[in-house]
Length: 220
Image 1 (tube, rainbow, N blue to C red):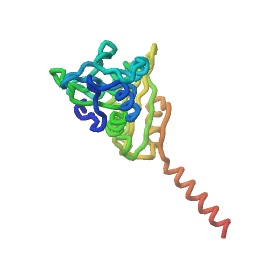
Image 2: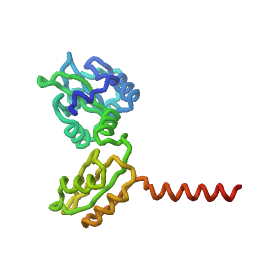
Image 3: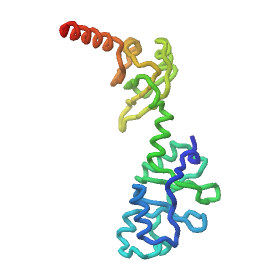
Image 4: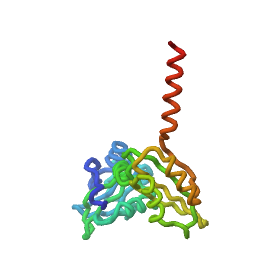
């Protein structure tokens, strides 16, 4: 998924002839902490809410604040992971998207990214989530996939997290079945450390059904 696919249709950029108070109004309206500033379709940089508040003159034009701009953007062909990296690094709530000639195309905001991430990681799909902790040198997605598929399941998504100053890593996978009991047992049999899991066990369902039946019997 590319930056061009993440652009919000709702949030407008600021223009050089807008006033400081207009910029603050739009930031409040869209719950963001900065907005891109453009001049005839050209991206000049992003102005922060803090800079506008510190300026002191609500009627000043934004063209007088171009020295306060932060030139952070992504090109339309960049991947969503690069977009997330830039937003995280510079602690932004929105980021400008430009074409190859640095013409302004649109704005990506955090809610749009979160929505797309949910689709990328299959969060909305039913199933269970399992987190493995292992040595970096022992990581093999092929082997992990084989273990999951040997239990009649499929991996819907996966991601890894490497611990700082450590040779350990976490591998989180989401599979297309809700009961992970058999998969967990297989991983443990292959000496994988299952750090966490989130699922609905059929055994738990059976126990609940028996309990409900027993309570119903007592109430008769």
